[in-house]
Length: 319
Image 1 (spheres, rainbow, N blue to C red):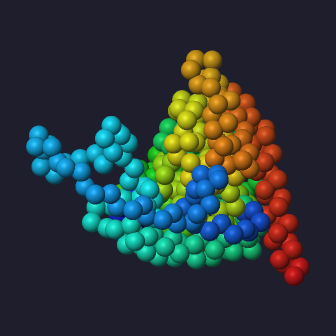
Image 2: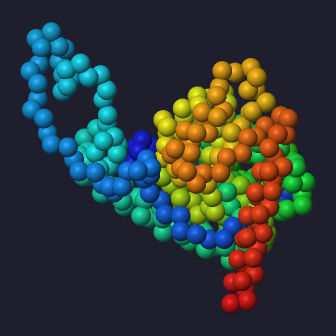
Image 3: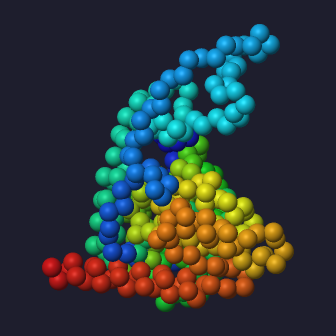
């Protein structure tokens, strides 16, 4: 269950592996699953605001409607309590207890994944974005550019179908599909169950394409080395401010489909500025799977991570 959106569990389906070869990892680092706050917000659990007396209900108001507590104020915020979320029938305290239980179990599983990957020198990346950002096209182009120089494998996350996994397999790289059913994100247990099926090579690259969603995947650590957020120029440049948790959780942002900039009213500089407001340490690359712009830098970043993962495994073997 996802405490952010209430998506169901028990519908996950992991498909058969198809394709050609395996994947690498990066140096392990604590990647605890947690909710993120905007830069400058320090209180871990903001106090619940004092209750206001209920305003008088106008006679014309329909049954069940709630009158505005602040006359003239037309902004309803259902994420202002300690749980930063809302679910019918649950108090903020109840939601907070559920969230801590779920995310605590996910963190433990993610730590096991991270250790498993690190001992094999596998560099794992968690690619996150909204639907239609170009994740799969970028993955296909990335694998083509690597050209078999690095053993690689892909985990594809979608609610239904194997379309994206089939596109990856067409490159000769093995891809395993995870269908989440009503679930809106991958979690560490899904990845843990997928890993033994993939026969991943040591010192390889594992690319995890998460379900298209800018909310819930931000909260769930999978055991990856880095989250890579992909924002396309066909979306709004204010996405980093609207969905700050995702960009705060990421180490790298790919501003994708930049070949379309001449045809769009999209301010790339403004989008990057907004992302850096949320996460000042975020690295940003401008990319296009169509023209290849920025892909040399993207490949170089991957290769640096691979080298770090391999060095970490070698150091562990010597120890």
